Each structure stands twice: as C-alpha cells, then as structure tokens.
Length: 316
Image (tube, rainbow, N blue to C red):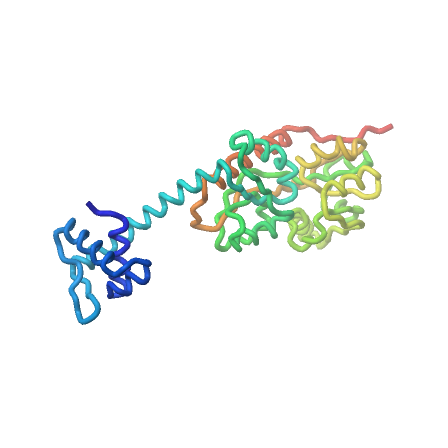
C-alpha cells in the first residue's frame, strides 16, 4: 500500500538524484530510504530509478508518478492545515482588521459574538484607519479586514462590498440642520474633522473633496482631532460642526452631544464598507468566522440608520 512517507522519499530522491543525498535531506539512514523506494516500487510493480555511478536516474514511470505524488502530498498538507485551523478556533488567537468607524459599529459586539461561540480563543481587532489596515493585509499580518472602499488601493486585493454608509452633517445649531447641506454651505462651514493623521487618505475627507471638486471649493477645517468621539463632543459644545457617518451620529450624538442634530448632504454622499483580503488568498476558518459575524453586525447598524429620520435639535 502506498504511504505518504514513501512518496516523500521518492520525491526527494527524484529531485536530488541520489539516495544518499535524499537520506541526508530527510534525516534518515540511506538504507531506510532505499527500503522505502523498494516498497513503493513493489506496490506499483514498476521500477522507479536506475543506478548510475553513485546516483540514480528516474525512469519513465517515475516521471509519470512525480506530479501525482506532489499533488497527494500537497493535499495531505492542506488537510493538516485545515485541522489545525479548526483546532485554533478553540484555543488560538483570532486577528481581524477593522478601521475606527467599523469598530464603533461592531467592535465590542463582534468580540462578544466570537467569545459566545468559542470562549477559549483570544481576539485581536487590529487597526485605526482603513489605509493602515490594508497595509497590514499586504504585509501578511492579518488575513482580512472590514474597511472603507474609498481608502482602498485595490491592486492585488479582493474587495467584497458589504453596505453603503451615508455621511451626514452634524451641528449644535438647529438652523444648520434644518435642511440638507449643499457644497456651497459645506465650503463655508467651520468644521472639526477626525482622522487627522490620515487626512490625505481618510475616506470621509476623500468623498467630501470629490463632492466639492466641481464647485472649485474645498472643505476647511477649524479643528483637527484623531477620533470621531472627540469631534462629536466638540460639536456638542458648539465649537464647530462636522461630517460623520450616519450610524456614528445615531450612536454618539445621544451620548456625547445630546443637543446636536444631523441632516443629509445635498447631493447625498455615501461611503461603502467592504471586506478586503489579498486576491486568491485561502482564508482560514477563523477569518471566515470573523467576516461572517462582522458583516452581520455592521449591516444591522447601517440598516437601522437607513430607516432613521433626520435628527434635528429643537429650538428653545
């Protein structure tokens, strides 16, 4: 009967052209390799090598066997990897990339979902900004992530859109949220914007620049901060207005800026959230689980935001 060990000895001997060299490569005594080759030849009822001097040369049978042996060993390794991947869901570490707003929507809930299914795992949510998260994927530090499409450099990446995330204008002044905000009004606004470290590639700013491009105007920021929570707090203090995803507005305004309201832009502007991984990558069961749970969580938040009416601060 054929064995994986026999096929491995055969391939190394085939590649090196020497039983002695194959033994050294595999860490066995030369007679052991010879025995494995003879057993394989007996199973196949065919000669695989001919002795030439101190080496061996493959026969036509060996040439025909080689690709099948390679595929068999590769399939066996894939099977081992699959078992290890499933086992890692019980005690290993699950790493998944999510940028700031996505974590706001689903971070804690996503971790809770994972631990409810696999209480023994360790969970890492990686990243602050979509650009950085994408770079982590390209370097192989994480397999996949949820990021904003406007920030993605798609070359070499597989991008699967998940949902559209509307951008809205938030302000503590009820007159500024009484009607949708046009490009002309936006260009004159005093804004606080988050993601200042990534301002050149931030997806929200990219969309706003595109929105104002035809008017020849640019959004002007009065205050720059890193996180959206600080931006919303400053809006609540009446120090500036901002543009943030609607899901973030629905979650943060009641808690951090209860007197503030929001309204749509005109024309309405949307970012798109997507699952991204390297093209052709074979994703592990752990990563596929994270994709499933993160997608479900974020779609729920966005769906709730889509049916929400504009929230406007009441006049006093």
